[in-house]
Length: 202
Length: 202
Image (cartoon, rainbow over all chains, first blue to last red; front, side, top):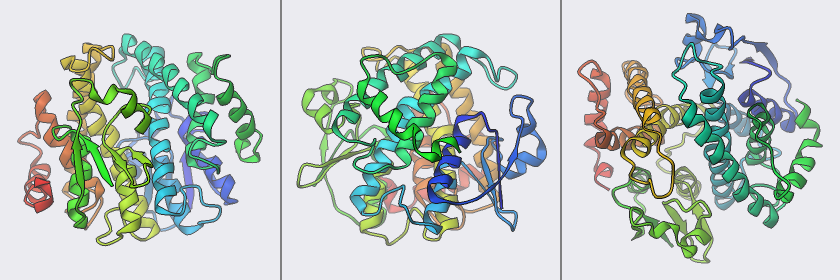
């Protein structure tokens, strides 16, 4: 099996960190998304919406969406659990994972796409919305800071996929000059801890 | 336990359909989101980002995010499975669920928020982006139509949470005058089938 990805993009990094935490080796094949390599017919057969990463199994079956790829390996390699175990743990992790994804990662991605024009050959950037999306992401850092003042990790006492999403979102946010501020002390402490895990280098 | 929700909003409907498919009875308490009842301190203690639905357990623990609430009940009541069983099924359902959520439901929601000004007391609508979001949703209907020409349900041979998300997104899209077109024959066939399930009335 292998994963088609772009090393500098934030979503593939979520999968690399997840697999590193699980101790799973993987073949990675780089795709030039800026040059539009992902828009080719062969890539669209792997994922109709032409996004990466894509996991290709040995029989040719393809799974796209970072979280879906992570879920596949969570079921096959449940230890350490990164999506939780009990119903309440699984629901709590999914809640934070989604709030961080919609409130932070998605807003940073939209800010990047609409502010920079990086993909202007294939979408309609609305710079005014890019600015709003960036403001939304900054506002979410306040919510996350409160949360990380209550618990060591985003979804509770243990490291989970919610931390992976938050780490990749915050590190990618540098490209749009969004960083945790001085007031986000809990986010900064947490960021130092999760960045020190070997998986953060994956 | 009970669920705080707003009957006319699309996300709570996802949870109601999910629970109906599982045969789970629930107490629902209505929240007036247009009037801002969700923005109160008491609601923010249940969900810091002040969105509904919220599941409140008997001990006061709260789980927000529709999909996280569904996940909670999937673990406790696995039959019928709506998130899949094997690793490949779970990953495939999560892939379609996410693509439909980001490509269709989220875009329709953003189109609604940015075009109508419904929440203009608590966000900055950018009408130009609302238009782009609506165009993105319409474009995703083409992708979904191709998919539903290949398989009876969004994520394969069985009804899943991906179908619930697509149904709630498409039905809500009427408020921004987006509907499947004549060319979306497979979407229309599928829509008639899933709308005929008793759960669609939940």
